[in-house]
Image 1 (cartoon, rainbow, N blue to C red):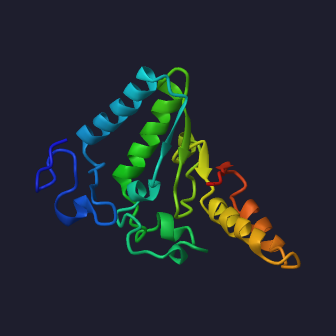
Image 2 (cartoon, rainbow, N blue to C red; image 1 turned 90 degrees about the vertical axis):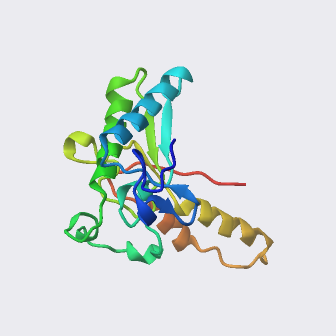
Length: 189
């Protein structure tokens, strides 16, 4: 895609259009051409490669204008809904629109319908609620804490045999979810 200094037709202008942690450009989701490009790309790959689902990696960078840069995980822990939906929420309405449209495309326009998964770290409420209920429409949220949990617990295999197993921590992580959200967990070996 063209890399104009001012953002060009696809990216946010200036510093807002650059992700300093990844060295990549950030889309301007408020532009119709960006939505067309990204939705057409999803449809093309689903049809050309007969995909049965897609995962939106780093969904927080799409959902928020601050892109979750420089925020600690504690920023969203125990957050009230105003942190996500209030006047000072910093939700990128264009990004949320893209996510909702991508999920509508995946479930209603493509055959077979795609399973959708969001890797999202803020705990955004409604991420897995259906779009007709004003949710983002994903089928699953990645259970972000579980891989780290398994890594820590597997490291305990080298601990003394009488070392206590943190059962409460394990139970808390495995059950930390909103009752209406399905989570997808994995472990990296």
